Each structure stands twice: as structure tokens, then as C-alpha cells.
Image (cartoon, rainbow over all chains, first blue to last red; front, top):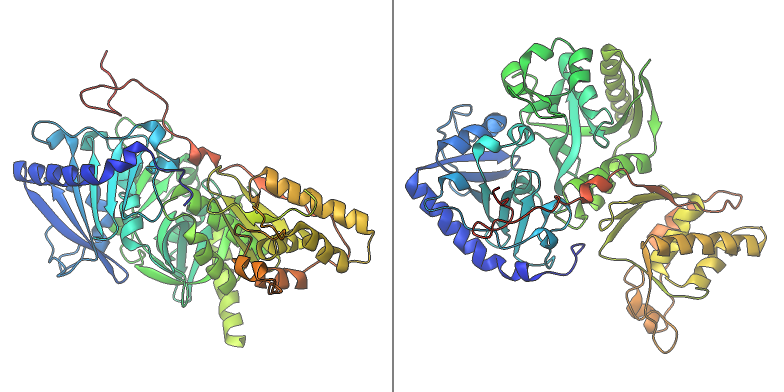
Length: 369
Length: 168
């Protein structure tokens, strides 16, 4: 386990978990429960919100993933046996005030993971920046997610919510939440690999505007075997000022807070604006490693090692909840499909053409093979 | 360190080798690394064999080059891998074999005096070795270390507990 030795705070986690579960129940009694089911690939997650306010804030990016015939509406048919459940509430709604958290900064490792034994049934993440906590009982596949105040939810949480909970609910052998984008068409998809700022979103948005299908700009569920498949998690894309300038036709459709914080991005509701383009999944035919370059775009073959170097560290460090188990799966994907590097130039159409060429090339190779 | 027994610094380090390129990730520091050619081959040997003398001898046997030059390059890389805490010195048993967990889980075989199997990693990396010896280089990347940062310290409201900031 990469987490350093557990601290005294970890030993308090089992009791805190039970107390927090009671706190959720009390908050539901004080407000009302609103439940809905999300479906990702063959997995489902039941979200049990205390009250409407947090549900309204977090559910929008999941609209296409809501299970049941009324997907897109709030009330949907529940799934009989969800694979995981998440109880969600805000401290502000807790009658009598919320329980204090039994750990301190020194008890947390990277990304707010509570230090403790790697093989334990209970884990906790204290999300830095806005102090949401997610507690996970592996054995029961049960999670608790408490936020201080929905009014203080950061913009990124509204755009791509509940990542630790999704990580634990959906991950398993050969399937992982991965920091990557994916776009494509009938020929299949390409996985866009790279750290933040490498150009994943630029290429994904260019493809979206160019009529291709869209799975993600930076987070997705990846099945590594038997063949790699990328699954959509969030129906959003995040635009910075450069994206708005480069792809102006998307700019009016993206929204931002009335009083944005530094580096806040505009959020594009892909499901609402491009309902036919938002794809639940795409089989992955190639890995494309973009790099912001300027000038003319250039595409060339890359090694599998270069693809893994672009994929693995950013995923392992952003979601360090599985001791790097994701790296073996990403290596399996890198071994199974060709890789390309893409110097991201200024012309959006050149980026669309580059993805088109990749899919043409790997399609031709598969026919030959 | 000559003749030292080495092991991967598990569980902090995860690694994969593809087509003669090795990617190493140190989950504790936020740094990651790559090795190619001789370097990837040395890593494969460190994973499977764990004995520095055997690693040096293996690489020397593959090149018609000055053995001292080869040994110097390999030992220098092994020192870097130790300094970066990607490898750690393994405890040794009375017969000089690694008693910890050398490399690819071959500790029991080694302790029993059996010939350790040639590791898949080193076998595959050997096939992509350069024809001329090139001193191996460990490339280090630190652009992800921001993810290792924790919130800044602030005062605690005793009643509400951390992380509630003390009013006033």
C-alpha cells in the first residue's frame, strides 16, 4: 500500500462511518430522500440524496446515465439491485449540526486519502479545496458523501461530480476511471492521453464541433480487456478562454458562474447541445497523445511506451485510490492498440482531419490483419 | 553497493515495460520515470534477479565493450534508482541471497538455490537492446508533484473540529 502507516485517526473510521450513516438518516428525516439510479456499462449506482438541493446541483452531468425510461427527468425507475449505493447530504441540513471529522491534515495522504492499511474494508477521502468527504465500505459497496454546503460546491464538482465515489463503485479488474478523453465515429474511438494542458480537451472539442462522437474530454471509465472500450461518465466538457477563442461556435453554449473564481472554466452541456454526438461508449482503436504546439498540426506514430507515459502517471496521481493497479490495465491497452502523437496546431479542422486519419489508418490495418 | 541485493521499493513503486521502454511511477513522491534500451533491460534484471553482480555480468555478456565501462554505466544507473527510492537494498540471508522480496517474486526459488527463471521483462527488453552499449539514463518527470500537496494549515474550531476554520 502506498499510503504510509495508518494513524490514530484511521482507527476512528469505523465508528465515524456508522455515526455518519446515522447523520445521513437523520438528515433525510429532516428533509426527504430523493433516490435515483445511474448506469455505467453493466454497473449501476444508487444515489440517495437528503433533499433536493444537492441532487439538483450534482445530477445534471449524469442526465444521460440516469437509469429508467424517463432518463433526463428527475424521477426514474429504480434498478432492483444496484451494484453500489451512495448516501449524499450537506452539513448545512444536518439537524443539530454535523459531526466533526475525526482526522487532521497530517492524517491525509495525497488527494486527501486517509492514511491506513491498503487491504482494509473502509477507506476515506477528504477532498481538498472544499472539504467534501467520501467514505467507502468495500465489503458492502456502500458509500457516504457529505459536502459542507451545496452553495460552496466548486465549479469542477458541478461539471464532473463524485469522482472518488465513481472510482470505487465502478473500478474492478480491467476497468478503471481514467484521466483521458475519447472521441470517434462508426469506425471506433481514439483515447486522448495526456496531463492537464496537453490538449485533450482541445482535440475532443474540435472533434465534437467537427461532427464526431464524444465520450469524454478528461475523465472516463475504461474497460481494458478483452478489447479496450471507453465509457462516458459526464455529459459535460470544460472550456477555457483558449478553447472559446479557437472554437467560437461552442462558446455561446457554455456557462460559467456569475462570479467565477480564478482559472474557472466554462462548462458545456454536451447532452443538451449535442444529444446525438454524446456516445455512451466507443471501442478504442488507437491512443492519441496530443501536445499543444501552435502553427500546423502534425500527426506521427508513437511508441506504446510514450502512450503509457502519457496515460498512467496522470491517472495514478489524480486518483491514487488503488495503489497504482490502474497502470497494468493501461499498459494492456497501450499494448493492444497503436499510438500516435499529435502536435496540436491552430486550425481546428486539421485536428478533426488528424483523428479521421488515425481511424482510417487503424481501420485499414485491422482489415489487413 | 557492489554485489548488493536489490528489490523494488514496493508498494510505493509501480512499473511496466512495453517494447523495451519502462515506465516507473513513485506513488509516494509524485515523480515518474522512464528507461529505454540498456536501462529498461537493467530494470528487468533488477526486478527478476535483484543481484547487482548478476545484473552487471548480464549486460557485460551482451556487449563487446570495455567491461569497466559497462559496469560503470550499470552501477551508476542502479545508484540513481536507489537514490530515487525506486529500488531499495534487500535484506540478505546468511548465504548472501536476498531474504526480502527481490524482484519478481522469485525469492523462494533463489533461497532454495535454484536458477531463477529469466524474467519476461528482461527477456523482452533484451530483444530490443541497442547493438552498441549506451550508458543508461533515467529520465525523471516531476510535473505531477502538485497532486501530492495537502491543504495549507489553518486554525481549528474546537467544537466543530477540523477543517472548520476558527472564526475571527
